[in-house]
Length: 602
Image (cartoon, rainbow, N blue to C red; front, side):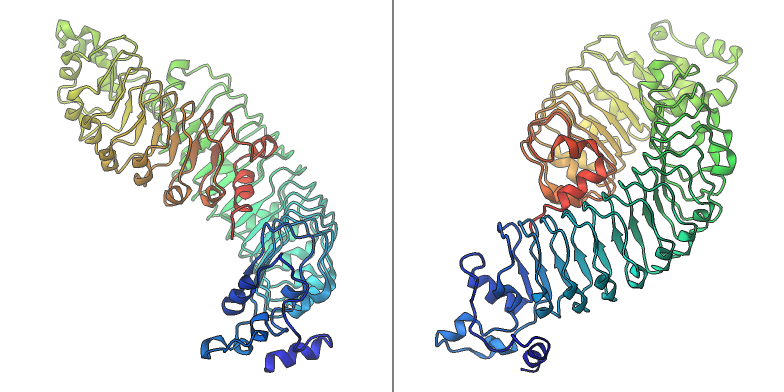
C-alpha cells in the first residue's frame, strides 16, 4: 500500500483504478500477471507502435483478475506483488515514449533497442534506480539533459543512432562502466568525458572523430577502448599512460605513426590495421610485455625490427598487405599461433613455405638463425650414412627442420622407408599432403610422443582412423581437400589441438567432436555443405577465436552465436542465409556478433 501511495503522490492520475485498460490484445493479461510476480516484462517483437497504458500502470492499477471475484491466496495478493524492475520493449515500431515512464520508478533495466525513437522523454530522470539502458538501433539525434540524473546507471548502449554530440553534464554518470556510442555521427569527444572514472569499456567506433582528448588518460579503470573506423590522424601521447588498458582498437583510421605505450603493461590486444603506418620501431614494442594480439595489416610497413623478439607473449601477428620484403630471423623464436604475411613482396621466403602456414614459416626462420642450418660437411656425413632406398626421403628436413616430408608424390601408400628414416631423430611435423592416400598411415602411431603438426591435405581420405587420435601432442591438423563427412568421437583425446582445417570436404554439419576439443582456437570448415552450428556448445569453446564457415549451406545464423564473444574472426560469406545482410558482413566480426546479440529473444 505504501508503494501505491508513493506513486500516487507523484502522479495525480495514479491510484487504484480498474486494470486492463488500453491493452486490447497487444499485451495478454497472463503476461501482466506473470510480470507482477517476477518483476520482469518482455514485450519485444510485438509490432507495437506505442506502449499500452496498462504497461506503464502495471504497479498502479488493480489487475483484471482482481475484478473477477477470484479469491487471492497468500501468495497471490496483488497489492503485495513485485514492482517492475525489468522492461524489454525492443524490436517494435515505437516512435516515442510518454512521460508515463515515471510510473515505473523501480526499473533497473530498460531495453528499447531496435525501434524508431527520435527522442527520450524528460521523465527518464525519475528512473533513479536504472542500472542498464539500451536505446541502440534507434533514430536519436540528441539525448535529454535529464539522462545525467541517472546516477546508478552502469551500462548505457546508444550505438546505431544519429547522435552528433554528447550532452553537457554526461560526466555526472559516475557509476557508468560500459558505454557504447558506436555508429553515430560524433565529431568530438568532450574533455569532461575523462571524469567517467568507473568506465571499463568505451566503444566510439564508426563515428567521425578526428582526435581524442588528452584527458582520456584519467580513465584509470578503462580496459577496453574501441575507436575503429574513425578519422583519427594521431593518438594523444597521454593515452600511453592508461595503466588498466587491455584491448585497444584503432583499426581503419588515418594513423601514420604507432604510439608508444610506456605504461600500458597490461595491453593484450592492439589492432591498428587499415591505417597508413610506415614504420615499426623498437620504441613501439619494448613496453608491450603482455601483448597477445598485434594487428598491423593493411599499412605501409617496409620492415619489422629485430626487437619483435621482445614480445614473448605474442600469439597472433598480422602483417598482411604491407610492403615488407624480408623478415628478421629472430621472429622464428616467438611462440606464435597465427602469423599472416600474405600481400607482402617477401623475397627471402619461398612461396611454398609461406603456403604451409605459421609453424612452417617459424621453423624456416629458426633454421636460418644458425647460418642456414648444418655445415656442408655435416650434411655430407648424414647423406653418406643413409641407405640407397632412403634417397627419396628428405633427410636434411628430418634432422634440421624436424619435418617428415613425403608430399606431392601422388602415392597411395607411404613407404616404410619413410618412417624407417626417422631413426632416433625427433620429428615435430609430418607432411603427407598431395598424395592419393585413402587412409591414415598406420605407422603414424610411432610418432605419437612427439609430432605436433600433421598435414594430410589434398588426399582421398573418407574417414579418420584411430591412428590419428593417439597423437597426444598434436596442435595443428590440416585435412582440407579430402572426402570427409564425419570425424570420430575419439578425436576428443587430442587435448592440445589448436587449429584444424577441414575446408573442401563433404561435411553437412559441424562435427560434434569439435565442440568437445576445448583447446581449439581455429576451425576452418569453408566450402563444405554445413547446414547448422550449435551456438550453445560453441559458447563453451572459450579459446575459439577463428571460425571460417564460408561457402556452406547455412540457411540461417542463430542469434545466440553473438554470445561467442571470444571470436575475433567469423567468416560467413557464400551461404544462402538472408540475414545478416552483406552490409553487416562487410563491417567485420565485431559488427556481426553485435548484430546477432541484439536479436537474441529475451
